[in-house]
Length: 139
Ligand SMILES: [Zn+2]
Ligand SMILES: [Zn+2]
Image (cartoon, rainbow, N blue to C red; front, top):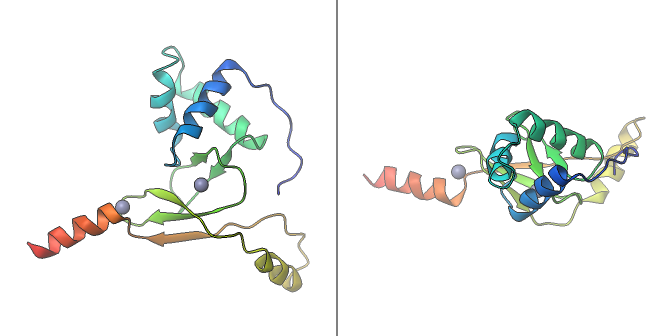
């Protein structure tokens, strides 16, 4: 739940960006999305993709996530959900557990802030990096 967002027009460019973003579960960065979108819109620039992503995130059409202080990533899933980031390769995945609303209630009891949201980021080691580590250790 965020503050009321300005409505923006769904231009062809935005529509294609949204379609490409919705195809993947990888939470791509702006430049990763640019590579995907460019296959369909060869003339589009990285700056245009970036600006559109920011606008779409501001309007609530997509989610902008900033995990572990790394590059901004984007997500077509706008419902509240949690993320896990691999501390080795930086891969970001969804964690499919119910959103903990009691956490907001508990926090609200301790602060005069009006709480409008919360983010939980898990950190771990993805399966590919675990396998790589096991191989390295076995050598
Ligand atoms: Zn990894
Ligand atoms: Zn996500």
